[in-house]
Structures are given as C-alpha cells and as structure tokens.
Length: 276
Ligand SMILES: [Zn+2]
Picture 1 (spheres, rainbow, N blue to C red):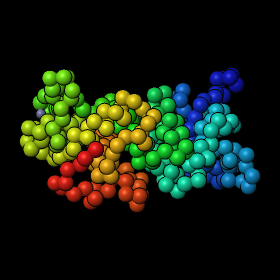
Picture 2 (picture 1 turned 90 degrees about the horizontal axis):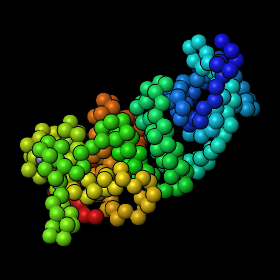
Picture 3 (picture 1 turned 30 degrees about the vertical axis):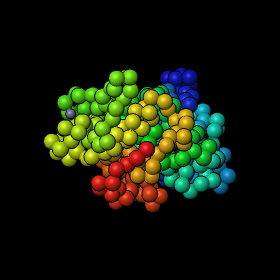
Picture 4 (picture 1 turned 60 degrees about the vertical axis):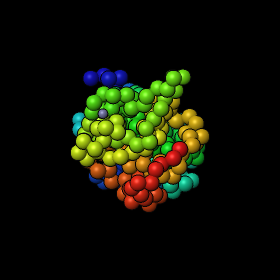
C-alpha cells in the first residue's frame, strides 16, 4: 500500500474520548466524509502534547489520519472552530455532551451522513453562540429522528390518516385543542384515535405545530417562538420519548439534563391546557 492510500484527511467533530492503553486516547470522531470513525491519538496524555489541545470535546477541524489495523491513528488536527462558547457555560456544555452522546449512539461506524454532520455543527454553533439550549435540543432531536428515517407524522393522523387540522372558509388551519402522540404509531393522532391507541399521550396541538416548524425552518429564529414553559416541556418529553423508542435505549444524559428542568415530566400537570 502506498503512503497516499494509508493517509487521509477528513472534516471532523470530536464526539468523545477515553483512555486507551498507556498514555493514548481512543477518540470518537464524526467525520463529514466517512461518518463515525474511532481513532487513536497516541501519547496525548503527555504534558503539553500538541494534539491534546486540538482534540478537546466538540472541536471542529480537519483531521489527518493514518489507516491502522484495528483503529486508524490521528496524526494531526487543524482546528476550524473550538466552540469556546460551550466552555463558558456549564449548561451549554451539558447540552453539547448530550448531543455528542445522541450522535455517538445513533451513528454506525463508517456510514457517511453529511446532513447529520451539518445538523450537529449547526447545533453546536447555536449553543456556543448562547441561544436557548432547550430549543436547540428540540431542533436537534426532531431533525435527527427524521434524518434517521423516522420522520414523525405531523400533518395526518398516524393511525387513521385524517388531516390533524381542518381548513376554514378562508383556508386557514383550524386545530383542535388536544391531539395525541404515539411513539409506536410514529407520530401525532387525531382526537378520535387518541383514546383508542394504547400508550398514546395527550398533547396540545401547539406541540405538533412547533415540531413542524423545527423540521421546516432550521435553527434560525427559535427564540422568537411564543412558547409557554409548559409547551416547551411537553415538546421535550414527547420527542425524547419518540427518540428513545426509535433508538431502543434510554439516553444517559437525559437524567443529567433534568437538573435544568429539561424534559421534566413531573412538571406536566394533566388537564391544564397548554397555550401558545
Ligand atoms: Zn385518527
């Protein structure tokens, strides 16, 4: 094999790292070109190791790799964006850690997914710039789930196919106060199907409208959405459940995030209507 074939570069985000053998670290990279790549950084725990500074969590850069037998070896990293803003806020750092876990768990090794890569870069930028972490998290969760192939039903009932909103004489959408949501059915339910689907939860129509908005328009202008605290929590709980159902596991960081009131289900009082 020639040197050219053994060495390659990729645009990468550092997701996680752990001790690996003596003085080395095994780094989980999300590369735009090759998908998730686990690679070894050698001698990185030595004081003043140059690579160590470049391979901090959530750093975006151009990584140089050499193909190895078991793991590729990281030989260099040129930093494009260290997302310093994430290190200035404990809350932003916690959310970034949650995103890293979410992606690390969702991605298969060496399965390129540029759209997911761009989503994570966009989300880290948003967090680092000080935008509302919980709304950024909802943006990430809902788009991640759709990009993984589980786009939730938000226009028609996931059970019977009836449109969730009707149109008035002027063509404006008329929403019922309450709808349902079923992770197993893959989305929102009309008021008629809600009581008939086991395990369905009752949700405000606003939750569906906000989810549609997060899928359609990206992270721009999230802050200007007129959301009550209750609706924010309901969106969090609904789509976290759906994500965990699809990933078939509980996410560890979820418990950690509850310290900030994110997706705190106990705060949802049954019967109290959510208003926008
Ligand atoms: Zn229905």
